Amino acid sequence: MVAAIQASILLGALFGGALLDAFGIAATFLGSAGIAVLAMAVIGSGKGLVRPVDPPDP
Image 1 (spheres, helix red, strand yellow):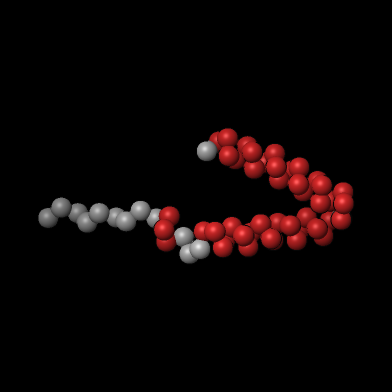
Image 2 (cartoon, rainbow, N blue to C red):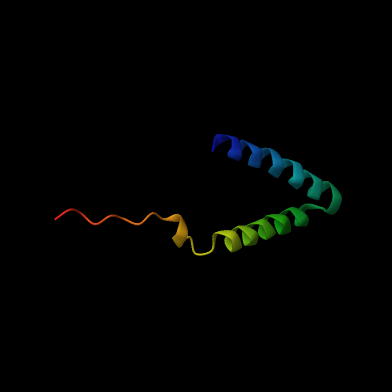
């Protein structure tokens, strides 16, 4: 999990910097909005991420 977070930080800075250099500050905001929409599409409602709770024993 830590490696995934570190990779995200590295790649975010890399792609954000490339967008900033190539297209300006507005491109970084549009890029992050696109990633957010993509993440919502992949995750959906999130119901599949939650484990069902076992009922207590009687």
